[in-house]
Length: 79
Length: 376
Image: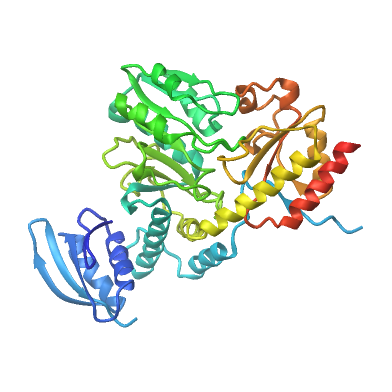
């Protein structure tokens, strides 16, 4: 996966639900309360990724429009 | 009468599934049923298993997860590489190169293409099974579209110099594929550091499940899919992902270490020393050093390989005649023929392949039995 830095991953071009699964994999390597910045595509990913991450106990802090799609700031939930 | 205890010395054909692998796969089967492409939470969970496995396999290869396409095994990975490169961009002709000791899953797709507008050059090997880089250089033509040379040979255990062979291909701008199904995790192998463009690996040679493999491909390498459908795996390999199998592959990829490689090498040394020291009629065809640490190909001059195979089998020792894929064929192995063995020698030859689960005592007992059978 395209990992820009320790806590930023670019999931543009990655279809659902792989984008969510990749985000979950990264979040599981983090401690509770740590934050991960995701870049995702517009459309289905904008709906599916935050909804699925919240079901898994993570918190979407912020969603912002980007030229390629959206950025999501996600806080790792309870381990 | 109690059956004899079984000693499995055919790890080059397939390996026993490791308990850790079995547990990882059981965890998948115990999870709610889901297609890894489904959007509901069970689908996300299945996709998570795939993501984790992809990371585990990529880590074992020292590469990026995006470079891997999961397949149904080494055969499909080889077919995807060969047909995928040859037929990319609607190409219908061109020149292909492979070695004379390729696995059938490379030779046959090459021959299939050769019957449909492509030319094929099959490179000879020396007496130890090595391809000479100069021979490769001389074989290349302006219309060469792909070279495929096996990394660790499944019958002999000889390892090709991917650096030297790949540099020849790189210098000519020709994509270079290698079948690394036997060598993956057995020897150091990091494709990103080598002049290779495509590399095939699979799970069941490394204590993973049968029916799972992967093709590593360099970024930007044009590839035509061989399976068309739902567009999984970056549209390169359609078909519902084998979640449990891929998870097992990932788990298996984490099991190898310097310690397991040292174990294989130690058993190899024990087997070589035992054969050389006790069986004067034995001619070892595998490299004594610098080859795959789990394969020993031996000609027992004057012996009937098939008879020896059956005697050992009855006594509980499982080895192979030639390679498992064509062990039932009466013709001598094409690999042994390529290294200069005549038919009589080839039919006196067996392949012994141990694993990290083989104990020194098992090897010792095997050598005792082999000596006793050859003395009769």
